[in-house]
Length: 295
Image 1: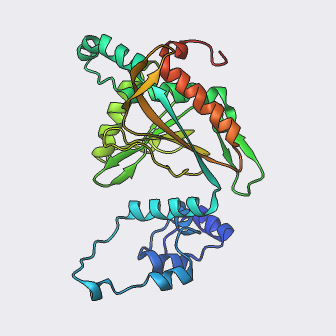
Image 2: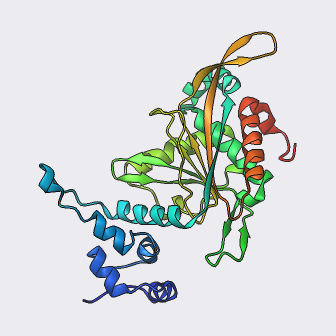
Image 3: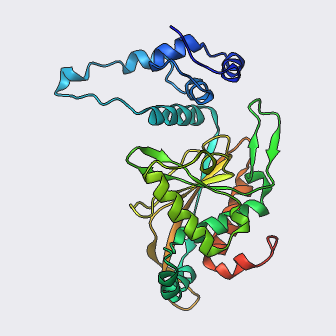
């Protein structure tokens, strides 16, 4: 079998202990890249598991088969390896959405005039960008050997987008240096490109951290999987109105669930709690997003 792979891919495979010929046979592909090597290394089930999972499902009733697209296979292998190898913990909290909802209502006419869809997600991107500046260990990556922490002096936010072709994660570059309207425009533009499979190479990869937003679908919380080389991921689900005691009476308050999964090799529980508490404070009072990062 003739395998097409660049010299760097071959070296990467050798460093990872991956047999390219076996990888080509397993995937049915003869053109291989670094993502194929990374996707298969440690990402599949162990041999014993494969043996137990090899079931004749047709023996129990009618079945049909649907080949997984290449993108889905790579994502499955990467997330499987990440879930198996990373000691992951998820911290849960709620954030008060009253101020953001009121502000969005107050600028509805301006948003319409601009032709911009101002969603709550834009505020989440800004809040996350500010928290990543305030807590540099979240804006970092761990070297493959686990010996070195790589701290980043940029803030790029990934936005997970559900498309008919699978999950895609376009990236908003320099989110900490952009205003609200620009962030809103970037979200709309990147999501449309993801749906149309027109994202450029420079519009994916290199995220400091990713937001997985299921608010438009539903749910009260979930446990998103950290996607290395990122060290954390933020999950959002649908806001719900809950009673909150204000000291004198119960008030109906729209609250959004926050689910922060993090790599416990680098981030401890106390830091995660502080990170989410600051994040929730910014969402509850978005005026604080205009203050210096340390305030």
